[in-house]
Amino acid sequence: MNTVVLSDPSPEPSPQLIGDDLRAKAASVLERFVDQFGGVGVRGAVISTADGFDIAMTAMPEAEGTKLSALSSSISAIGDMATLEVGIGNNHQSITIEGGDGYIFILNIPSAACPMILSVAASKEIMLGKLMYYARLVVEGMAEA
Amino acid sequence: MMHDNDLAEDEIAISYASACCSRRDLVLLKSVLSLYGAQGHAVWHYHRSREVDVLVIGPEIASAEAAAVLHSDARNGGQAMLWINDLPVSPDNPRVFQCKPPLRALQLVAKLKQIELYIRQQRARQAASPRFEGREQLETARFALIQWPPLDFFSGDKDFLRMSSMLSVRRMTLDELTLQSTRPREKCRKFLYEMHRAGYARLIGPEEENPLPPASAQSNAPKRSGLNGLFSRIRASLGLSSA
Amino acid sequence: MIEHKILFTGTVGAGKTTAIQAISEIPPVCTDVLSSDPTIGKEKTTVALDYGEISLGKTERLRLYGTPGQQRFAFMWKILAQGALGLVILVDHSRPDPLRDLMIYLDNFKTLIQESACVVVICKMDESHPPLLEDFTQAMKQKQMVYPVIPADVRDKEQVLWILELLLVQMETRQ
Picture 1: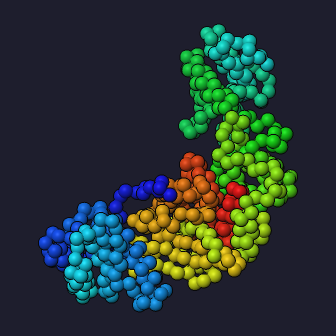
Picture 2: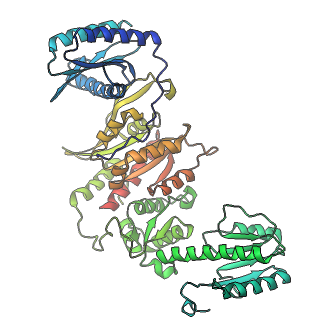
């Protein structure tokens, strides 16, 4: 099915339930996160709603961040199904996609008010342990939002 | 009726009849027509019959009748009309050409040219797609669905709905439809006839490419057994009647 | 286990999950998530897929998949369409521009439709305001994609079964 075409290029309206405060907080949290790596390893990051709308992104073209938000939403939802089915918990905590030239990490940000997802694009040079540590800090920081 | 091979190559013959016209207008019409024909345009012939290319309707028609004439089903042959009348014509109606009375020669000639163009285009279209000559043709012609009919067309008959659904994926002949639907041939014939008459199905000319091969005449032979059996199994599991 | 698939698509709230629920033998699996989009007027929205099942005997199964409705999940449409036997497009008549909605799905699933089968279902039909059923069939005629268009209430199992019947009839005719 290579011929499927997105017919409607106009962007969907940005949801209003995401307040400016939340956006600002997400933006600054992401800045601090990327700073930890000094430009090595992390290619970009986006915090999005669980239903696929981007809230804030950094070091990433907007189109990519928007797309990744939707993709991560679907992948997370299937990840949740898998963890439930196999019995390793109720919600996925993280999913790692390994490509030839890098990784995508998708982390669940549980929050009663506004369930979110953190997606990070990284190159192969990334120190996995360091990334997961600081990514978890992002999750904790946003979960209190 | 004059044969087309009596005419010069590009000339065509147009038959017409008239009704409710004033004597003055008829006299003017005939003299303009003979001049018009002599100039190498279409040659118009009068026929005392309704089965003509153009109906000339004058102002002496009663208004109720006029309304009926104007709104008559455009799908029936697409007969053109020269409307010598003040009553307005919808601009969306391509087959009615209006000249407000009293008739004037210049105005009339302009309309004759428009009518001639309309008829040339219509004949070109008909040459490209086969004319429906009658019920005998139903037996062998191949039909394609061109628009899903409105619900009341089906009159609640589920067989008709199924037949339309079949026709939506494959262009079929009466034989093929009868076989595929397992319904009586007469019912299938009626379906195809009504669909064609109402304009929801059209005939396929022999030169047209059929995107799906016609259902094989030996359809009783086992088809790809896997899939054919699959549909019966789906029907059974869902509690739907077998086809 | 031999697997077959039928796909349900359409805008958010049109009734994909409901339609699957009406006929699935298992309680449908949904990947519904709380919606942050106030324009869709729903609390939850499907972000990956809905899933239902009908068994066809011991070794065979018919899977019913519902796609997400929102266009940003169009990549899921592509994934889910692979190998489907047919497509049901649910059109929500109460939306502002249902004709445009239908055109989007016809365009995006064009290849699948042309290779298999399609039924267009108008949900929440209100005959007192446009577009009328004929507007839908006329639009499809212009596109030369002529398939059944029927109004239905997909909460009713009988009506969903009838939709599947029209789909099956197309699939059988293609053989």
